[in-house]
Length: 111
Length: 110
Image (cartoon, rainbow over all chains, first blue to last red):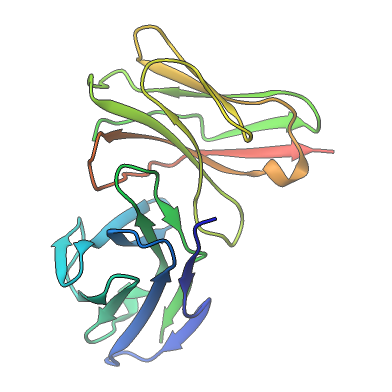
């Protein structure tokens, strides 16, 4: 089975901090994704990557950046955390044209 | 991606079949129909997908209307562990983005 592991289930940070969310997949998938999930808004794509060092903006990239130095790891960075970035963050990976596999999410609170 | 419409919630009794509908009247010829579900406190989980023909796997069956403007996810015997939000999504072949709508919250009564 594909395993997508997110480094933290719960995280609390302060406004203005730089925040790193880490995601690792074990299936050698080319494609990796970061979403945020908010009540009433569903899942929204922040960034995705289709190869090492490659990235594309999703629907809501503002305030975020990403890093993919190795194929198995995709990091989401909040450059200067703000309270409106309090959310559930979900990482996913996909190989070729197969379905996406998601991690269990990181519930991030910005105080 | 084209839009999908699902009921907000449905109820079922344990061990009975459940039919979860999805309308996608603006579907294009290259859109695959995907179903995911999300259990409480977990990320979405892939259930099944199809293009034109009905599909079966160990989790569920997918019935696709002949005109492809609607589909139905069938859980043959609902269990309490099937209580989740079920999302119907259309994805272009090789498209990178999944657009999740509101989904259907399935409640299973013992």
